[in-house]
Image 1 (tube, rainbow, N blue to C red):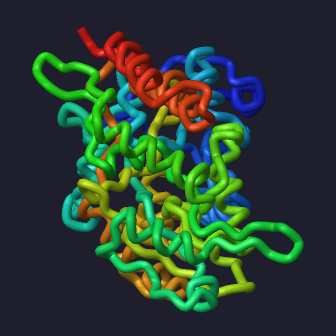
Image 2 (image 1 turned 180 degrees about the vertical axis):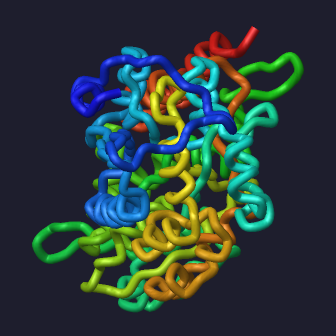
Amino acid sequence: MKNNARAEYTLFFILIPAIIICSGCSNIDTKNKINITYHTIESLPEQLSALQTLTDNFERENPGINVEVETAPSGTLSVFQKLKVRIAGKHPPDVFYMVTDRIDEYISRGAILDITESAERDFPGLKQDYYPEVIESCYKNGKMYCFPFHFSTDLLFYNKDLFDAAGISYPEPGWNWQDVLESALKLTQTGQNGVKTYGFLQPRPLFLMRSFGSELFTGKPLKCTIDNTRSKAALQFLIDLHSKYGVSPNNAVLNPAERSQSEMEMFKNGKAAMFTGRTYMLVDFAGIKGFKWDICSVPRGAKRYSRLAVGGNCISSDTKYPEASWKFIKYFSSREGTMVMTGKRNCVPALKSAAESDSFLHPPPENMRFSILQLSFSEAETYPIENWREFLEKEFSSTTDRIILGKTSIAEGLSELQKKGQKYIRK
């Protein structure tokens, strides 16, 4: 294809026939640059800075390939919406970032190439060099559709200076939710100007319900069982943090897309002593200078629960450049590429040698190893129902928000949610 045709593809995303990855793919013509588009949902300045370094290094090593990076718009409930629209419109990016607990819907659409042969050929130590829990999540029905480069779990972040000022001990791995509440009561303070420093921030409802031991879908035949005593106890605890004990603001008043950012800003500004955040936040907290902070395992309820989210890259089944796309993914998750992202601590590297290196584990925080140790009890957030993500984002989130805001009772809200959940079960 001539240069002007390639440029037209890049600028206007005209659909061209898909080429399936195979051993017979021709070599890349280094005389004429190939343009591939990489789509990512990661938009923090530190993440984009690391990604720019990685793509620059890749282009230097592969002079025949140019990578155009595009990001999903921030401030939306589903950061994958832009990607879904592009796929539906038959002009997807060549390579795109994906979280493996969301991948089923893209596989069912035929939107992703099977990369098993390429991955196992070019990464012979795949199952030894990478964390097994991470690699396992990238396979579906024995085939690999996503190649990992990092993973994220839940963590308990805390402000050491606020703990010191209150004269109480730092969080420990054996903590339960009552321990969190007791410390939060001592940490919550109102300043002379009326600005409150909160002891804790409300966790995500689903995270807390799972920690309390609630199972959303169980049994044979499968049924929605979200309306149970453990769900009720979790939601009551969540409400009480704000309305009864006053140790937390009410996050449900915020737009769902703004909550994580709001929590991060409160913590960075010293207005929250503790909160359960995600590993990816480490990259943003690296610049904190005003106080000492650290991390610990998430508190235990009926079980110790943490959501495992594995981030990696997929190749669109509609790409014209499968070989160039694989070269980019291969470099991205190589030791060299991984170490670029490791330096910024963008989640936990999937490559063991990178995650356990000084480049990642150095302080702050002192207890960085907890980011890896969480893996042993973290679970992918997937359920055997039709359109799980749709249920979570459209039904679960809106209903639990109404419960937390007092617009419906816990009993009524969970009863309603269980009926809706039943409709999503695969027949």
